[in-house]
Length: 328
Image (tube, rainbow, N blue to C red):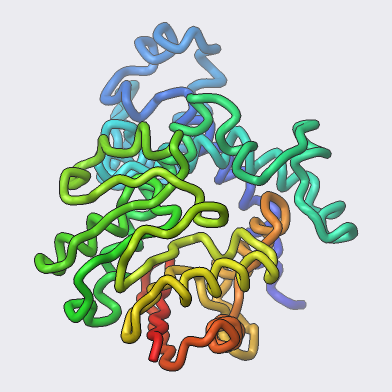
C-alpha cells in the first residue's frame, strides 16, 4: 500500500494555516508571555477553546508552554508580532480576511479563468480598489507587502551588480523595501518610489524611508520619473499580457541607452515542475488578479518584444527571484 502521508498532510494543511491566522488576528503574540486565565480574560474567550488554540500554536512551534504559562518562540517574536520590524502579521491578516475567503471559490476560478472578488465579496472595480477599500485594509495590505519585501528585496538587489546605475525608480514600490535595500547596498545610487497617491501618503514610516524619494503617480497613466534603472517587484504577475506589454514598452522608451529594468518575481522552472511556491502564487494570482507567474523564458520573450537586448536572471533562494534587462 502506498504511503498516505502526503495526502493526509494536505488534508490537514489549511487547519494549520488557519490556526496561525486566528492567533495573529486575535493579537495573541502581542500578549505573551501570559498565563491562560489572563489571556482568557483579555480576549473574552472561552477558556477551553482558547487553550486548544494555544496548544495548537505550541504544536506548530509558535508558542511554548510551561504549565499555564505561554511564551512566543523566537520565530513568533520575529515574524508574528505586529511591532516587529520583520513582521509578517500584515500579510497574515490579509490572508485571513481576504485570501482565505477567495480561495474557497478556487473551483469557479479554474472553470471561468477569472478572479473571485465579485463572487466572494460582491465588489467590482479595478484590482487594487479591492485592496484599498478602507484605510485599514490598505494599511494591512501594505504592512504585509513590507514584511514579505524585507525577506526578498535585499537578495534581489544583490543578485546583480547595480553599481553602474545612478538613479533607481521602483514602480509600484509601496513601502519602499526594494528601494531602501538598493540604496543601502549601493551608496552611490539615488532611489525613489513611484506609487499611487494614497500609498505614498502613508508609506514613508518604515526604517530607511528617509533614504528614498517618494513620488505620487500611476505608472500606467502618468509619465515615469527619469531614471537609468527602473524596478518592478510583484508587479508584472498582477496583470494580463496586454497590460504588461504596455508597461514594458513605456519603461523601455523612458530608459536611456544602457538603462536597466530590475524585475522581482517568482520564477517557474522551464519544465514547469516547480517550485511549488511559484505554482501556489500563480493560483493566488488567478483568484485575486488578472495575472500569473511565469518562467524566465516567458519573461524574456516579453522583454525582447519590448526591445531589451540583454536579459539575465537569477534564482535568489528568497521568496522572489530576479531578472535584469538592459537597453542597448
